[in-house]
Amino acid sequence: MNDMKKMYLTAAVTSLLMISLFVIIHFVKLNMESSRESITVGFVYDGDESTPYTANFIKAQKAVEKKLGDKVTTVVMSNTPDSTGGKNAVASLIDKGCDLIFTTSFGYGDAAKKAAAEHPEIQFCQATCYDANDDPVYSNYHTFMGEIYQGRYIAGVIAGMKLKEMITNGIITPKQAVIGYVAAYPYSEVISGYTAFFLGVRSEVPEATMEVKYTNTWSNYTIEKKCADELIERGCVIISQHSDTTGPAVACEDVYGKKNVYHIGYNQSMIDVAPTTSLISSRINWEPYILGACEAVLANERIEDRISGNVHGNDIGAGFDKGWVEMLELNSIIAAEGSEDAVQRLIDEFKAGKNDVFRGDYIGVDPFDPNNTYDLRNGYIENEKTSAPMFGYVLKDVITVV
Image (cartoon, rainbow, N blue to C red; front, side):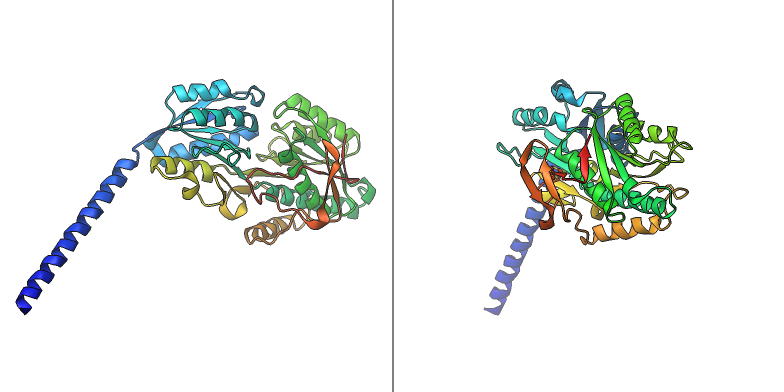
């Protein structure tokens, strides 16, 4: 009887082992079949390598090409103005057989989402938009953006430290601590950025005020430089920007030796064109998302499951903690003493989730509806529900649109 039990037990164990082996082989084979050897990836760009915003995406694109090698073939549609909506560029990439398409400027959002509805076999990733989770929701339409308010705030602190130095040295008075800001459009993305920057300045110089001029274009060197020139003429002693060229930096450099004006850049270091006036820049590092999305499509995985960040449905963002935001070169020759230490301290604070930027004794006013206000004493959590910045209130009495 014992021998019979042993025989049955051995047979049962053998059967279980065979079944387990079959299951393992089946799932390995299934996984191998579901993954892809290579994909074609498309990019729609507002500009080209000569414009800092697009250059950042191209930098990420090239990094992905290098890391993934022959697993990716890239197709690029450059100099597609945001104002055109990008419909033709997206259609062209679909015709070229792209498996994954990155649309990199806000104005492409509608075209990308409509294309996603018509082509469920293709993954569409739209930068800077906030509509991925709006009805109708498509599993193949995604939005993403770095939490850039963090870099803007640190740049503002560096500007504020320079202002404080100028006041201490008698170069300006506290009343002359006026910042100029060259802004593209009165969108939440832009307003959130210059508000974070300004609050960084005010953490060092509470008397500081700011004047904003809109260019109503993302990328126009002549208009951006003209706006910066006008702000300098109005007495602004530091110029920053949310615009796409080096025009504001050059405007500051042009008056070096005649006026004490400094510059804070965006998207790329602008020290090369303004070596005596440009203090620092911040940028979004697009590589973590673009690389992760490519790897997800290659593996037939959901994009948001592959990438490390703050996930909101089909939307994802991150800041310094995941390497999505970076501070660029500090011009230590002209920066105020202690600036380098301040940059690192603030980055560490953001990584630890300890910096509450949007808070203070301010009332924000909706530029499109003066009856819609926000009391910043209550605090505001930027990027709480979406990767795209949503703070769209202009701070009353201290920020003026001119």
